[in-house]
Image (cartoon, rainbow, N blue to C red):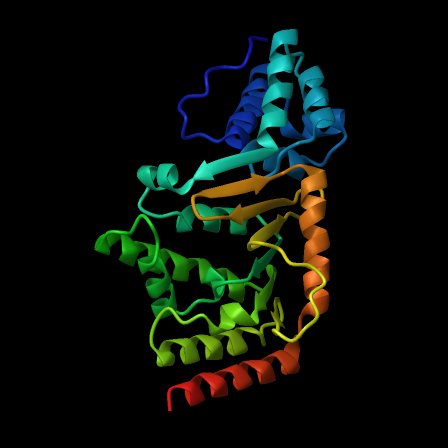
Length: 293
């Protein structure tokens, strides 16, 4: 087998390059996905997820893949380097938005491939829970700003993502701080409508919403929000995305993911759920109304 082909452009992530190269090598070898899975000792569905880029294989799995397709030594070395590089990726917002008007469709694909999505948000209401007007106001705060046409497309695409909340086979968990609940990117009526929506969505069987009041003793203080995506074979198929001002960081390394899962566990201990959370939302709404009287 030949060494790895060119990357075909900087817009492709290391994860995508690895996935496409593994698929290319399997196709050239003539081995089916089922046969390859048996030789490596993983499920056929995981082979599919690896080749789609939704899961990054471990280095031993990539080594076994190279053995199964009889890859040349230089190809195996290149695969190992690419695998190591794929475990942490950094994508600047500026570069991403130069390639497309918005990122909502890309995020929806990630959510569609996950069995469980966990979102911690300390500053804003998570996008999957936002009303249309709240989303529009948030998008207007972005730097660099959206054009008017791109802004409308981004809002519509964010609302399209939210249809997944009503699929009973999908699972979503949210942890939201009181600061995020009280953040007001528009008039009071905007925030009141947003709080009502959170209360309504919290009644869905497959959606679990936890709220973290100010008066709870802190067990952990993450400096930013994060999202954990888990596949059917979680936690093996998990990865984490962290959004900061100028970049989006993707963490795929098992040890790094474990840090975020530990933080999630501690944050969940600080949160309130169910009827208690809905009562808290009502209290916040009353406070918001009283502040403008």
